[in-house]
Length: 192
Image 1: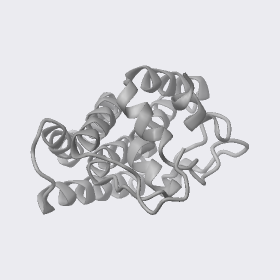
Image 2: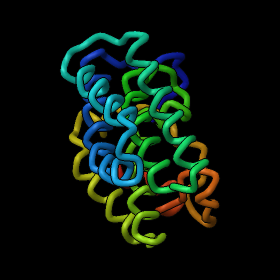
Image 3: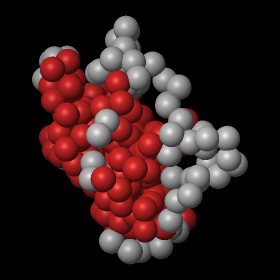
Image 4: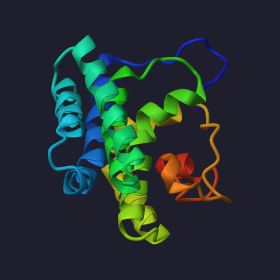
């Protein structure tokens, strides 16, 4: 975990690894979005842009714009009452956001690492009628996808401030449901 320094050591290669991980977590949820909104390509374009960054492309305004576009698609899906599709699009937006992980010792940066996994898990949970075991299964799969470089990077950051347990959010407002106990998400990813 991060100490009192003003920055965290983080190479461009490591940020690319995080982006690749975020894409791997978010990509399976695209099917949920595309089933509900087959003509909207924004989340897929975001995933493709994040993958291109992971594969060596530069961070550009177009990359950031693809994240915003995926988040707009999420908003539109939510407004249409398609909560699972909304979280799937948010997962795509967060996959792009991984490319913008900053070396700041702030817990809020953790969303760049785990946001795509959390939103994809919520999308799967909602698409299964709200079954929390489905979300937990996706989190477990996301842990398997987190290779040692990603886990090492995650350990450099303080614990994220959001609370994952003890409450469910209204799916109509598009928040990630706390699919696993408080503090366990990072613990799950950071354990040896």
